[in-house]
Amino acid sequence: MVNKKEMVTKSIQNVTGGREAVAAMLGMSVDSFNNHLYEKKGSRFFTVDELALIASLDNTPYVAEFFAMQTGHLVVEMPNVSDLDNVELFELQLKLNGVKGLLDKTISEALVDGKIDKVERKAITEIKRQYMAVFETSMNALDAVYGENV
Image 1: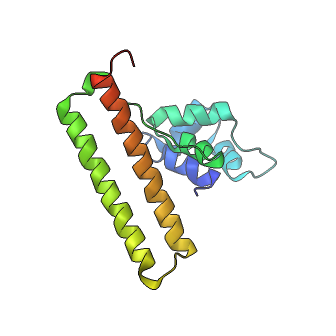
Image 2: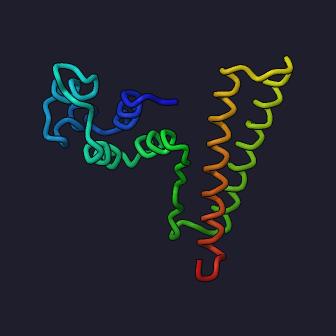
Image 3: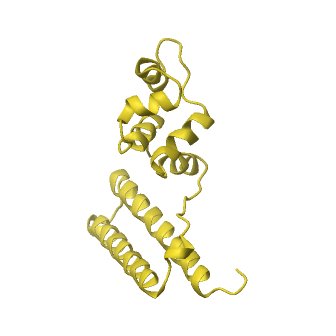
């Protein structure tokens, strides 16, 4: 599971201007941003509103995934209805099959010695979450394209 510092770091890694730009958007200096990130010099971690702003800068799911994992939930990307057609549905199905194959392979390899250790379980859990997310995305896309009053 990703910790909160990793969540912020992953969220800002592709923001143009990096940490400096994110700090400016939050109305902070880079030093103040770092103090919040590392909870130093009496600084509290970022507020939920600040985390939401960080997430919106690069439209990444890391903040949502962090909170979802804390509460045993799953983040699913909502399909853009204007982009959906049969080709997109086919590509989603291919992606789903690829993740399912990786999940099956990972489970099979973990069972070679007759038990699943903590490292193997962590890998299986992560791939399972990916599979479930892709499955839900693909079902949402199917409903968007073919659903009646969905």
